[in-house]
Length: 182
Image (cartoon, rainbow, N blue to C red):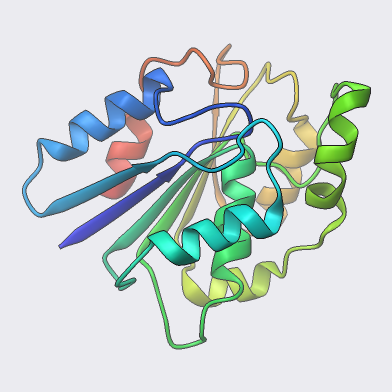
C-alpha cells in the first residue's frame, strides 16, 4: 500500500489549498494512505524539532512511501532521510518550492532561517534512500531564486517550473504531484 506524507512549510499548516486538494485526490484512490501533517511550532521551526516530529510520526517506511514537502518542509524531509539506516528506501519525494538558501527574508526571520541555511544536508545520503525526486518551482517565487533551481538541477533532480505561482501559498492544485505518484 502506498503511503504519502505531506509536510507543509514555515508559517503554514496542512490547510494550504493545494495540500487539501492533494489529500482529497489521494484519498479517492485505492491502496493509498495519506498523512497531511501539522508540524510543531510552525512560526519558529527548528530543525531538531521538525525532524524529530517526523521520526515519531512516520512509521513503516518502505519502497511504496512518498514524501511531499513545501519550502522548509522539503529540507525537513531531506534531513530526515539522510539520517535513516542505509537499508531503508522510499519510492520518492516531491519538493514544492524547495531551497538551500533564501532571498528576500526579513531581518527578524534571519535568526530562524540561519540554521536551515547553514546546516548542510548530505544529499548523497538522501539519494541512497531514493533516487526518485521531483522539484517544482515557480518563476516568480519571492523567496526561492533561480540559483536554487540550478542547485537542484545539478543534483540530478527532475525539475518543473510553473508560471506565476509565487511561493505556492495560494495554489489550488498541483496536478504534477499526482502524476508523479501514479
